[in-house]
Length: 102
Image 1 (tube, helix red, strand yellow):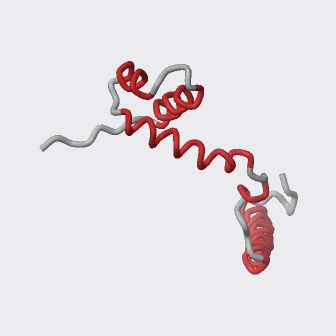
Image 2 (tube, one colour):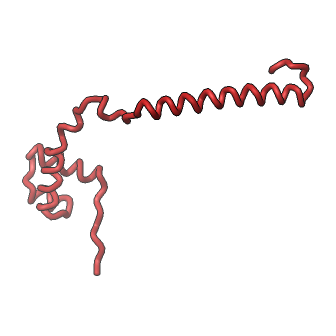
Image 3 (cartoon, rainbow, N blue to C red):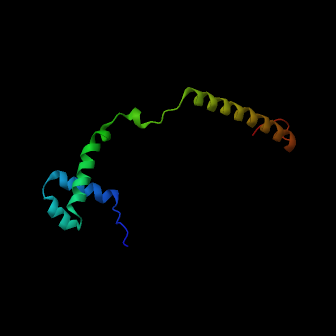
């Protein structure tokens, strides 16, 4: 039993773009790239259907973070700052720098 051949996204995009340009027929492209014409038609259809997402707004690409998560992160930052200051003071006492910070 043979395994299915997987094609890279770059190859799919290249072939689909050539199919959209219609400089060669699907059969000619299939012959040139040693692919089945149905594959090329499917890739072309997928590109055309998803083309609008390439021009989507930038805000949709940014991950959405809830206010609760932001508050939690701010609290954690505050905690870490306090811990750092405590450790800095403790290290100056242990190392005997006379209370001076580096």
